[in-house]
Amino acid sequence: MLLECFTKIRLSLTFVLATIMLLLAIRSLRAFHAKPQTSFGKIKNPLCRVSAPSSSYEQRGRRDVGLHGAVRMASGRPSSGGKTLDVKLVTEEPDLVLAHLEARRASDEQASSVSDIADLYLRRKELVKEQQGALTQRKSLSAEIGKLMREKQDAEAAKLKTQVEYANSVASTAEEQLHQLEREMDSLMLQMPNLLDDRVPDGDDELNNEVVLEWGVERRKVGERYLWHDDIAAKLGGYDPAAAARLSGARFSILSGPLARLERAIVQFFLDQHTAENGYREVSVPYIVSRSTLTGTGQLPKFEEDLFAVNHQVNGEDAFLIPTAEVPITNLHRDEILEATQLPLSYVGLTPCFRAEAGSYGRDTKGLLRQHQFHKVELVKITTPEQSDAEHEALTRDAEECLRLLELPYRKVRLCSGDIGFAAAHCYDLEVWLPAQQTYREIASCSNCRDFQARRMALRYRPAPLGAAKEAGKGKKSTVLCHTINGSGLAVGRTLVAILENYQEEDGSVRLPEVLVPYMGGTTKLEPVAKK
Image (cartoon, rainbow, N blue to C red; front, side):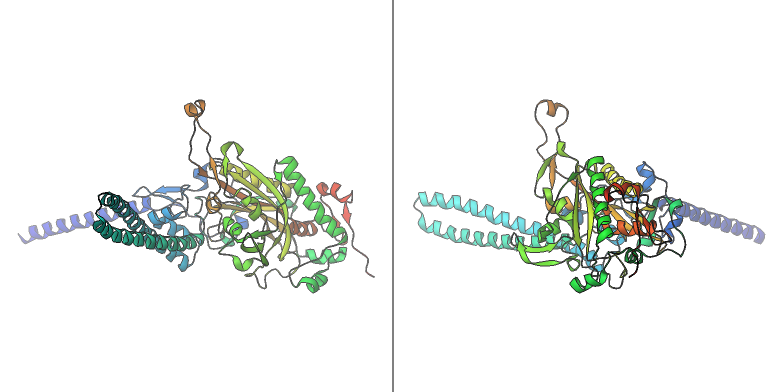
């Protein structure tokens, strides 16, 4: 009997253990399928990673569907899905907005503003309801007063007039509070960066950017014997940083003679390439713009310390020197409704750029790499949402073609979530090889801002009617936010730097790229100036 009981107990324990192991196995299997199987992670050495170009959207960003149907990317954040960053989205999908802020390594203050906006939005709904109720009551009472007055019941009408005055007071107070509340919401929304495209990899900084391609690797000058561009320029004559410092302080430069002509040749080549070959419309724009213009493209209010303010106003507003031609060119159609048939619009413009470089103290103090004033050829596209991705790729290719024609080694990187710009949803940086530093440095940044800037500057278009509506001469009356794209095509000063370093010869001379020879009057080489 004792043996039989012991056997039964052992069988029971075996069954319980087997059941527990089975449940643990099922739980592990579910966890395995629930989490993304790939992660962009940190790329400690971007030179070692080259992603093959792909036209497949799914290949550019792996997606997983969670238990509640929310699409999450391989990066772990929920998909932006082409959504517009507005008060409605912040209020209705705060978790999505917070996830994208976290991916951008945003501050705690920015994260807390999400709940602040939601609270203000709910309070706004209450105030609207309160105001509408008071106005409805006033309308009803006014009708009753009119009736009483016609019936000569002046005493009763006077009583109701007191109630009308009170309703007016409630409606007026609600309206004032609404205006104040909306100003607070607008202020908070202006501090919110754009949502990220699903292809943007997660990462803290430039070390985590994804290398998409490298071009001209075999052309790179590798070794320690190469001079810095400013040393080369000094030997060629025409580079005088000391005189610039006497005039304007640090981070300015003066070029003269052959170097000034080379800078002009670069500009002319870029403009000819983009207008004659790539179909951009050249524009010449103001270098001073208003506060609202900079707010439209996203430089204000967040980056005011990086701007140079001027001491007079524009249209009654504070005014600033432009940090990039992106600002005036993108704002060309601010507060307009375009027709779908006009899009895409492609603009190119040359301007000086003025940047205070407030956060870069001690960085790139040598030479021409980081200046308060520099020239840049800017490319801007205004498109429909459907054209957006293709036009972003086209603009980036146009910038790349300039580097290839100049035969300058470069690489193309996709910026990670912690390095991408405030207004950009998706961004490629083009980085040119600099032999003196034995590294790649940014020479162009090509950003797709989706509808982020268009929403801030009220830039919309009217979709073309389709099908039967088109035949009947009728179409959609509603309008849609445009998408805006911008990029350098290219930064002129850094192109000059790259040419000096990549085309330097052992005797101190600098060969010129073939495409620039016609712009240099047939000159093929810059020779060093003999010392006096």
